[in-house]
Image 1 (cartoon, helix red, strand yellow):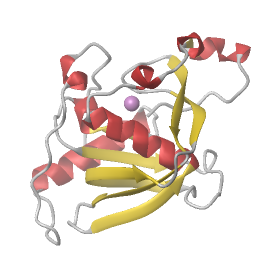
Image 2 (cartoon, rainbow, N blue to C red):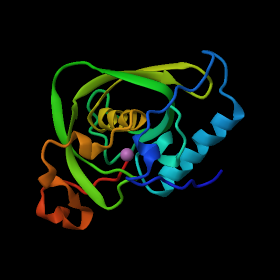
Image 3 (cartoon, rainbow, N blue to C red):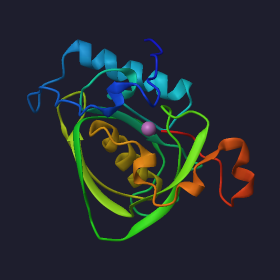
Image 4 (cartoon, rainbow, N blue to C red):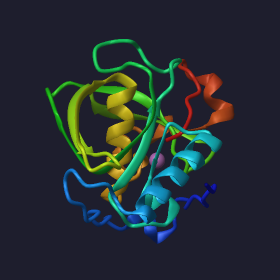
Length: 185
Ligand code: NI
């Protein structure tokens, strides 16, 4: 296990579309991908963050890790606490047009937070490290972190999604806004 160096905004790897990971459904992923995923989980937990996408550790592959901490889960349907998860070649679709504004941070943009609109409810799918298809419906923090991490695979950073850049703020100044200081993803 190893803690990996996280690319920061401005590094070109964050602005390149990631490539699908070759896999055979039902077959375990190769050892190098397994090791990468476990190192990404360790890096995410160390940071600490709630999500990390492979481009953030300078690997242009469609692989993300994420978690839903108990203190961030709303316990709504699709937003329960979840231990660290791995998703390979993930994709999502919104379940309705409803969008919610919420604070986000990013381990590639340290020290800052901003208010970002995301779909309230989504369905997503991807593969786990055993090559099994994972399909879930998500809402709340769970839905938000998935959308944030999948954006990384398509070279999008959360400020690109912000309708109002006046909310882009240093964490120390969040006292001027109502809302919690959130862990970055
Ligand atoms: Ni991020």
